[in-house]
Image (cartoon, rainbow, N blue to C red; front, side, top):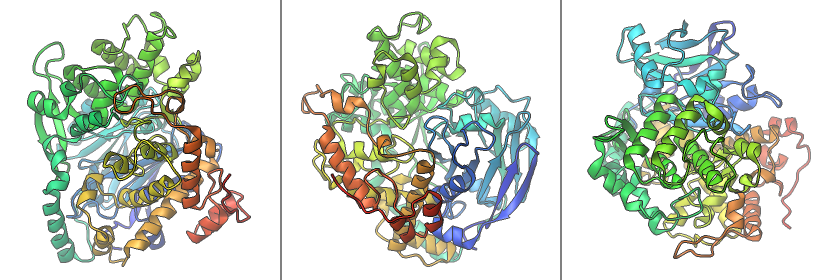
Length: 621
């Protein structure tokens, strides 16, 4: 096969052995790569009843067919496991140079099974690979681990992806960090890595990736590079994703004070425009990327002087306005803590904002928060709470390390009503009530509250629909977005290139790289197959309609911001939109894929295994 390496490694950590497995052509064509391979792996390996921290849970790393080629924004890899945060389909995608290196070493992916009896890291060196002792680096931060592994291997060019102390301590929002500033950020996969005693994965690749049409792929990639320098990506190049702060402020969809509000009175002070003037040290690009969106901040003076961290919109908003914090120095420090200790910035910000609201309402006492003055806007307390969370220290740290869903269930006293999550995954930086199509997309996401599964926020933000209303038609919008994004995440492309892509471009890239002729409609069908298989995994683990709703705050509290005052989501309009989504998907009204739909997608075996023996038509009402 071209494009693909054609093989992957299966590692038995308990026995300390690995073996090479061939990637079949049918799996490659039907599931594309990345997300598709991950869905296939989780469904096949992780059966009902396997707990996230069990050695029987799998940890799968996959690239796409374009990684290692000249195609722009393709140096991305994805990691998959049953999530310790949600109990459902867990995965995250990271950029940087790791995926490029892995493909150039001659591998499409790595599947880790079992649990090592001692701390280890896995080293891939072209066709060779070995499990190495990591006892000496256990307990180190991600940045320290990266340097120590390179030093031990005697090669500064080795790419390293690792967990920090949070992953080792099984903090449920722990992530995986590579290239210092790139993360597999969501659903707690760093904690699964920690449960397997796997500290890091290091890769050195010196080969080239063979593609079907080198000249054609090069020519088309150069065209895409030119488009990536055009107006569709300008805001990412100039301000990075923090350009969204003032855009969302204007639309009253900037989550502030734990989603109580959609505007932040100090938005100008934490905007991408202000950040560029006062904090940006440099702007960098991932391997093989012509956009360069990564804005790295440096704190120049004050108590956090010398702090350096990569800053994106989601991190800035959730550790800033969502916590009522206006201090860019403290926000930069918080992101650095997350990156080095190894936790998800989005989840961390939402959890701390919830704790701040609990504290202000008297639900958490001074003793419960270890003496911190945990009021909204207290930047130092936000950083202090974060450090406790990462280390799982004190009453507060141990509580917050469980994630907002579990923490609110432990505390009770009505705090569940303002724990902002779906399926246990903390909500991203998009207000629920003033972006209603977005809310449907977040809540129906297979990995929990996530803006990266369907891109449904785009129609709201751009004014393509009335963002303050919901109806049955929004379900089709989410459905189309999920299928398209499933393809993007399987190839794997950066979503920032999507505006520069014309219809048919993804299929063209795939065909030029692999030689498999794939029309656009067939690619979208593959995206639908992939998404349905991921949904089947969730159904296997107990998912149903009850898991596809936004948190109570969306329904029970009206917005108070000027311009959207009085807006909330009614359960009637949400149910109508949710019915429309299930209908578009061809699922039952309980949100279960039907035998008929799965058969259309070539998933008859899965339909039988899930007990979907009869064709069940959608029934509204």
